[in-house]
Length: 196
Image (cartoon, rainbow, N blue to C red):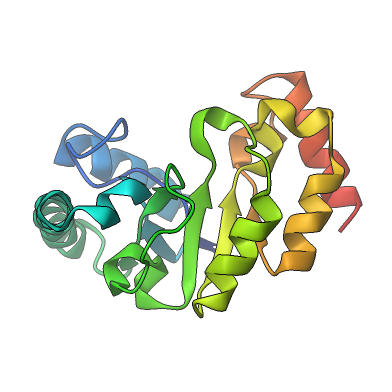
């Protein structure tokens, strides 16, 4: 038993060859093996997905088919290498369109009501609490990816509280906590943790 037993990882780029994460199944399994060794028991892997694709049915179908194929390849490899691991899928939805149709369960975390979202270019557009409220109004629960990494966050840390009041959850990156992204994101991460 390790200190992470029972932990579910909700943000990873392990589907091979579909984004800037793992390029091959071997790379995927290497990352998964490290997570399993640390005690992670469930992974919901989240390739990048542009919300604007929801407005173009052909492009949406093409991207989801690509992700379906990659996930099935990963699932087969994980079943063989780590049958004890529970593997789910979702997306990290880039809100390049603030009004996405998130009704397809493949866009949400393991088909639940939760959806991992991020703002474009690691900057915070205006009216983001309104976007959170609209997503909530559709019945989904947004989880904002890595709030500590947004460049604008230090100028207005209060926006994080506004996201929470609007109904969002937050997901922090391990790399931020250990200083992988620099002192700024690490300091914001610690500030957010200390603030609950």
